[in-house]
Length: 124
Image 1 (cartoon, one colour):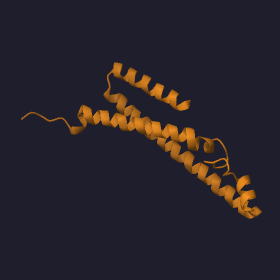
Image 2 (cartoon, helix red, strand yellow):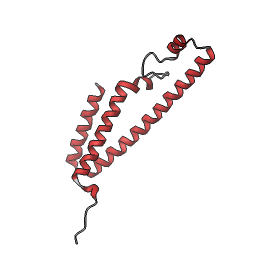
Image 3 (spheres, helix red, strand yellow):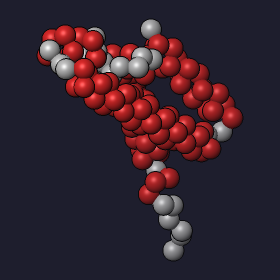
Image 4 (cartoon, one colour):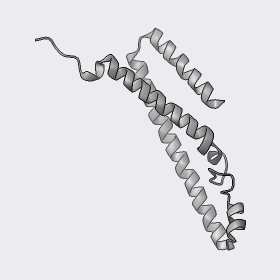
């Protein structure tokens, strides 16, 4: 009997993995563009610009102690999101590198171009 290739060597499986990777990358890019990006560049967590310490202090009539506690909570949230983003970047990088390892040099070049196009579109 001939040796069977592992099922993950199937072109369909590899294509599915690439598509899952690309979808994840696009979802992350969209999330950054339309949700989390503003939080990462400010000290206050704000998916919505109204969710700043100052706005919440004023709208909710917070005491100075509550406002300080809120600032700590929002700062912690920003740190948590930054940590998650860093982990997501590492996972994406590792996935991209694993994909590149199975490609020949010409496929790697095309893959790199595709990734650059996707990244450019996500930054618009």
